[in-house]
Length: 183
Image (cartoon, rainbow, N blue to C red; front, side):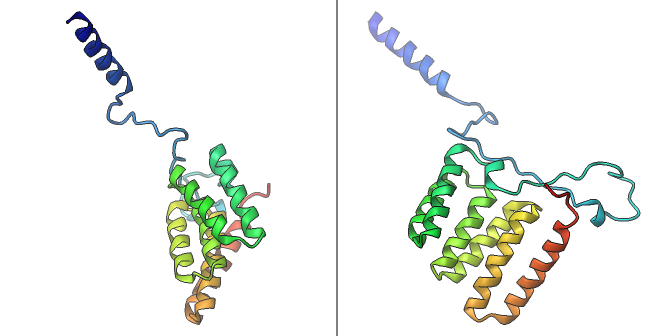
């Protein structure tokens, strides 16, 4: 009887130690990157606003390595190597694993869109890049890559008007990037 009670107490303590409280949930092995909105450069700020005058322009991350964990970075390297070698199916497999680890990483979704483009899956490429744009939260570096992929996908589908709209987005993003300080 004493042994049974000890077992129940030990099991209860083990479960209590493993339990998480609401709001304290940890994602293992890597937490998802935070959702960050990046301020527009000073050249795009409203002229009648005194907010942020003299404040430095925060440059958003330009690469996945700046916001990704080691596992995702390694999977993205594998995917890029597979794409360069002409194996988009292997690249897609690596990127889908990376998405399971960091589902809100806009860089991973963007590279997956390029992979779908290489597979001639134009509708999926455009959809994935649109999702990446939503996750990018104003990061023009990610959005520029996404709009280039969308432009190519629309052109390949024969959607001239859609490709022209995507080209306008590319031009606007390239202009806005000139306002950020060079690294």
